[in-house]
Length: 283
Image 1 (cartoon, rainbow, N blue to C red):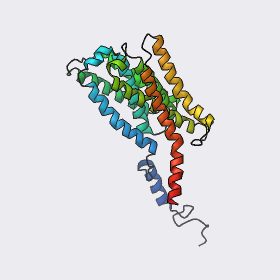
Image 2: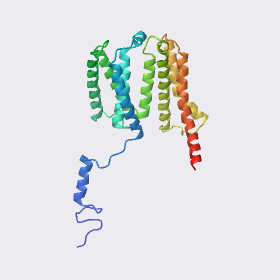
Image 3: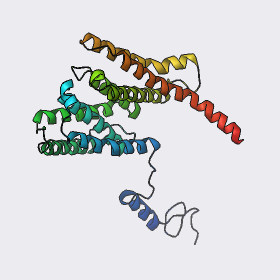
Image 4: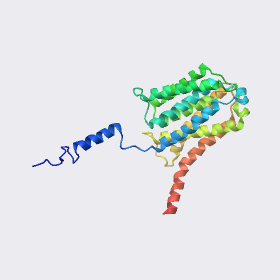
């Protein structure tokens, strides 16, 4: 019998029988054979979520410190910022680099899940001394969750994270009526150092992933201006707004914030130099 080239006895082209092809197709639908490894970015997000969520739960279930009461911190603002960051981490830890698609079930599941968690969170706080179950706190939680999902709808991982950082920095700096630098100098200094360093790191990644971005880590004066522009502009805007709102300018915090920005930029531009030096030693 003459059999066409490339056709097996099973009748499927390419040397694959119909039965085996149907089996592989079925496995592809119901039991994915090839699983993609987690990206480095997603692993970091999962680790941050694993650290952030338990920490958030612990701080929400301890008596409010007296120094926080003296600072007259806006409780609703803290709830909004906390759930904004939580939503951002949850979405990208689960979905990787994909934006929110409201036609899918993913964002609705996260919205419902965080709503249930918010209710349980408020209910369990009623058992903590000095705390109460407040429906307005839950509204602030959901506002932060929706804002986070909207940002993840419009922007990819790095730009969305940059905006989340900017919102949190601006909000936490202006969420109190008192000057935290006077009440908690060490905590305030650590916050400013870490917050602006994280924002600068996100900004560098946004430039690297931009279609019109500079070729980092190539060192050039114009590149240095571009990488420092957004963090320094945010720092200046936040401090000027605080000054216009009647708060202290906070020169010490501003200097610490600038050190955080400078540390990140120095790491970006010096890392290739040390890498080349290490490679030259090994070769």
